[in-house]
Image (cartoon, rainbow, N blue to C red; front, top):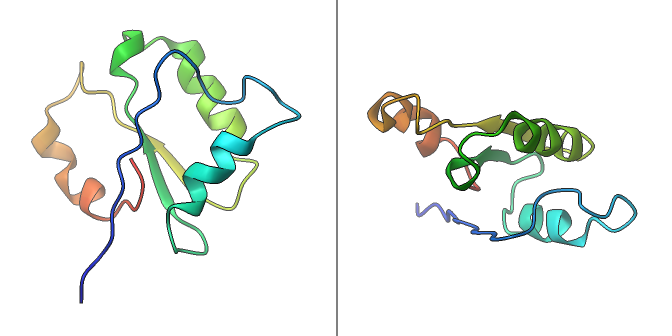
Length: 90
């Protein structure tokens, strides 16, 4: 059994920039064939700015998904391998 995984890179934008138009967020979630996908945000480009994480959770908690965040600057990636393996979208 093969499992499809996706990495989505977004530059210069951000989640929920247009509250009335969440097409990017809907597209990201459509990449998974799961009814309620696990989705992980890795905000390293922002220096782990809390406002980006808050915005991410504000937007994705409106959808049928399980949003999580991985802070690479503060944690060792090997500690998160089990949760990454269980994640359909990064």
